[in-house]
Amino acid sequence: MTGDVRDWITIVLVLVAAVMCLAAGVGLLRMPDVLTRLHAATKPQILGLIVMMADIALNTPAVVTITLAIAIIFFQGLTAPISAHMVGRTGYRAGSVHRQSLVRDDLATRIEEAERTQASEK
Amino acid sequence: MGDENEPGQPDTSEAKPREEKTSVSGLIILSVGLVVIWMLLWGQFTWLSLITGVLLALGVSIVFYLPAVEMSIRINPWYTLVFFARLLFDITRASIGIAWLVLKPRYVPSNAITAIPLRTRSDLIMTWTAEAISIVPGSIVLDVDREDSILYVHVINVWSEAEVDAFEEEVLRTEKRIALALGTKADVARVRAGSAASVTINRGGETP
Image (cartoon, rainbow over all chains, first blue to last red):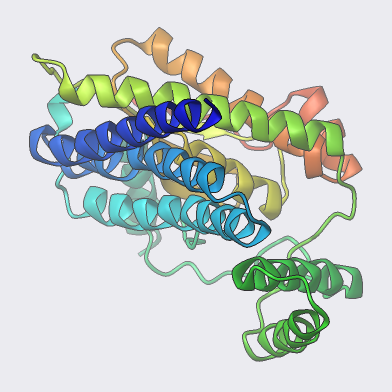
């Protein structure tokens, strides 16, 4: 009985993780520019990973697996935003932004401002 | 986040106003964190992993020396729990949202890049806030203005100025949760007072 329940939980969790990774892949193809692609590629799979780790911890409930799962989530959670930030920053400066779809762009005004002060200082 | 330069200016090398002091307590907190991570990675809590962990932590902090961050010893367990619970909830909710956005039949992009003036002046709280809003799907920190504590955030799927403002409120609430959880007393006071640390943002349009 308990084995059955655990199997069902596993099925649900793995399915959720798979859908999240699928969404990341589809988003990479469908989104129009670097920034939106970053959203699709780096984010939903964090949840996918958390769910997958939860499933592993559930199926092999030992201290070693649980601590390792926590460490994996921790490092993914810490490093994924940083790489997204670096790619996003570079992407914006390289001009691969779909500007028509921006409701507001404060960074453009800020960069403009900075360039203007720099030019007036010269 | 690794950037300290002004946006758009490649070389601003003027002295930072914040004092940078090394403190023993900061080193100890950092080392304890490293040892815990080391033991988590090995998956065993034995004397051997503890001793090798301590040696490695000391070695790493001496060899890869970083400018000291103003650490606070204060950790509020309850608010830390609230923060992580809320973070997990946000990640789940937003992941489903982004997955649906990506998979739904008709997708029309509408995004925004907004400058969010944080209230904190602490590098640590700022980094944590940037991390927290970056890990929640739907927002990426594009640039950081350390002088004025401003985060430049790209938000996906927002359709109006009002929605962007609502997102900003959300970020400020995240900052508040983090400051309450692990900020110094000064941070907590500043967040409670609710005034932006920086000057007002130029939104464009009304430029002279």
